Image (cartoon, rainbow, N blue to C red; front, side, top):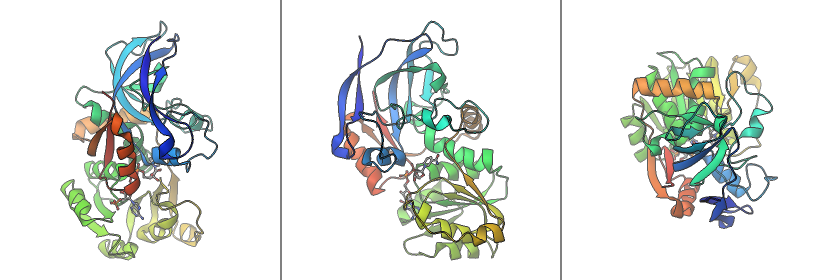
Length: 339
Ligand SMILES: NC(=O)c1ccc[n+]([C@@H]2O[C@H](COP(=O)([O-])OP(=O)(O)OC[C@H]3O[C@@H](n4cnc5c(N)ncnc54)[C@H](OP(=O)(O)O)[C@@H]3O)[C@@H](O)[C@H]2O)c1
């Protein structure tokens, strides 16, 4: 029987997340034994741990949706992967292509089923995707949730075109990928942040216009000014309750709001009038499929998009990694080394 190290949540709260030894199950015919080298944190992982994601979460639970590593062994019926292959986890273990459906959500890693904050896992081959040699383990581990969500929003649903303007809220994982994807498509990008230092880093990545939402709390007016009274074509809306009403003002007539996150909270009273009066399209976005992931990998390779991460924590430093996310101190992604 082989064992691995994994983070396991026994009750809500960071104090109840422990690094422990787990026993790996026997390899089924369609399973893969994978050794993960790196993982990355998403805001969702923090919500899962704190109990803000699903208050009925079954315990104990291994959190984490994003990891990259190498195949150690495959079950006898696996034809898609072989030992030595470099792979990343798929956020949804069951979403190959097409529209999301009700069953997809139940296959999300690190929520309804155990996740990948583990040095090794035995999991279905269908829940992994091959990654190119040009990506490091740390880079590949940032892609499954944040990058794919930004890609799905702007490219798959949003059909982003060169010359359009994209408003990106904040400088976390999803937002920085959105900035990079938008620039690679020839868009003009406006970035908001609470920090001038982070805005300077966004500028270095190609951001065209910068707004500090702390010193400019009515940032939607500044967006309107920067777009000559028209508004933006796309909003990467990660704020939720506290930002949606402002995003509705910042978007142009018939523009799109990609509704992704709830960083500022969930429940809100939103005036729906502008949505119909200005024909705004609101896209609910929930990560993406394997097909989208493959197209995203191709585009990243063609445009040399390199994932941006702030700091790499060792697995033993997991608590500090979660705390950094909690304090919003990071820029882009936070990586957890599992080596
Ligand atoms: N729907 C989906 O499929 C999906 C997928 C991934 C993530 N999400 C959600 O999207 C959100 C972002 O996730 P993430 O992993 O990218 O988070 P993250 O890396 O923790 O990003 C946090 C950043 O958001 C910014 N922020 C916080 N409050 C803000 C506000 N009022 N206005 C503008 N920006 C604000 C801050 O940027 P500054 O420090 O620059 O101010 C903060 O650093 C979360 O709610 C997450 O649950 C949803």
